[in-house]
Image (cartoon, rainbow over all chains, first blue to last red; front, side, top):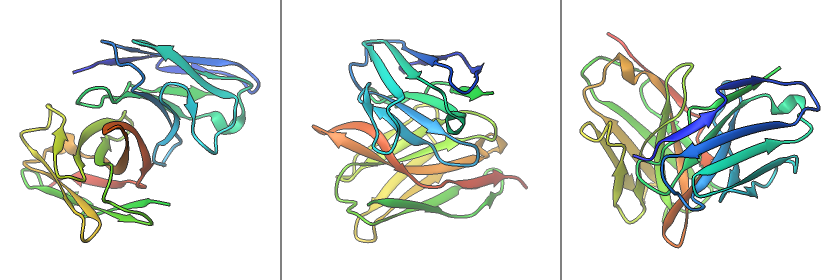
Length: 106
Length: 121
């Protein structure tokens, strides 16, 4: 199995902050890498796919980068609606594993 | 646009089989992958498996001996069966579409709203 190690598990931030979340894969996964946002009691929504493509409907303060085994989600100018849990996922191999999640809270 | 909706019993007894259905509306089921994911209360996401519209399946090895995922394109449904459940299988179960590119599974979009299944006697 490809392991996805996400960090930090949680972080405390303020409105207007810049936040960075990291995900490391246990082997090279090319560009088969996504980020999801999940709010309490809701299903996750794809936020960024193909490493860096922003899903329609999400603001440009979200960005993704990375290559091979190291990937990063950056949120600039954090807004109240961004407080949520973020998950990374690889779809290079089976099982299509998720990271453990990062809870972004005030 | 494609929408997904899970349905099935919210309570299953230990050692019985959990059965869920995902209804696909607003688009075709004759493409892409169709996946099941679960989330135990207060925990993270676990990919269970998926079925390609052509019928091939992929399962999480940790569940493979107990899982069956199938698809009925005529009814635009796909299904999850998880046998011999225990309390560890209590979770919110989501269905999702695995979008494809060049035949490869890309991202999960959209997701169903999820359905809580509790395993208890």
